[in-house]
Length: 500
Image 1 (tube, rainbow, N blue to C red):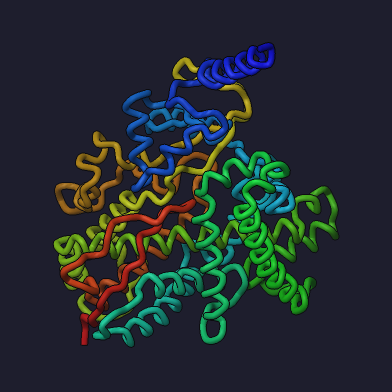
Image 2 (image 1 turned 180 degrees about the vertical axis):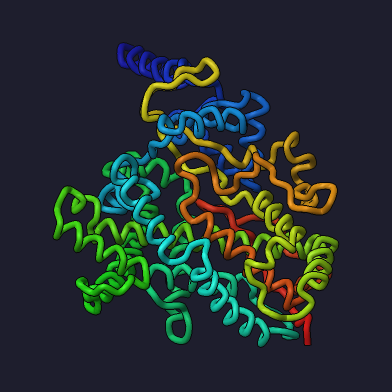
């Protein structure tokens, strides 16, 4: 009987703690289950935003949901995001991580996506400097992208009039070559295509596995639960080894060929970083702790992930939306015929004369809403938001998808309507709340590169080719494949050349 009383008391305490005590000072939100949190409703999302919009309607512009035992304070209103992540940016610039997972997967909290403080500042400053030197936003980077587009369209020309074309794969090779050339100095062609196939398969496998609820739990109690969720643990361990084998091999090959005392400009990111390591060790001053080969391998991981998945998935979504909206496709072609008129290579100089195409790309980014849950931040000090006290080191997230599907800002948000980005004169209209690259000091590092890629690839694709559903009776589905980023269900197309 005494044992039963003890058990009953423990159960009462667990229920009291879970349903009241741990939630009492946080913004309201859906009731979590012990240990699992709100993982169950998160698993059921199909588009990436509906559950968060449902919670926003029920609990307001700021609410709390739980990933296992981690409370995630979520901000969904654009004006509130302005007040917090813009006007008080330093209070929200922290990065929420799980140290045990960082140590296991990365060898520490390294890279650029998951670091904070001085290490993050040094890495971001260096990366931006290198990208500028490589011609980001200037003709140099544009020319590198155009060179890849020439190879891309030449390959597509061979697919023209064939029964089927795997356009998503062509996008992935094109974008993968651009990011790989920037990082390591070579594109994927010939035998290197097999390397890309393996690495892309590994990347997709890893991205999809990270939405497994077992991983969220495993991340917090790695030592204990790796024996329970053996499959998840082994998958993470395998991916970790394969990723870093690839990146460390690239670094070692660069080291063999690199003349550190050369005055020549670096030709890729790894070369630039190795020179920075050399200078930091040579000059001292403390920078040698920020620039290491281990840190470089993690930078490569972050930049490759971010540069590959987001751009390729957006390209795939854009074609999918236009196949399902032939009137939009027709207007895109009409504008291209009116402004360009030939199969010549389209450059950034043409961009201002193609407002409907730009509006279509914007609408595709809005509808794609690639991140079902934005990357988790952390408060760097105690803050108060709409009367809610949020203590230092609380996990907090700017949920951009709720802004992109806000029916006041974007009427009929589930409809694909590029015209919402045009004014009455047909000119491109700036919508302040359109922020697909996130907001604040941790806004996407590669935004300029991504915008350049999307415009140049899509403009040249739609100018040179007609694209149809592989089966006219069955359009590609809008059903999404879950992962850290959403991607469309794989589809094939038929293509025809437009200028013969």
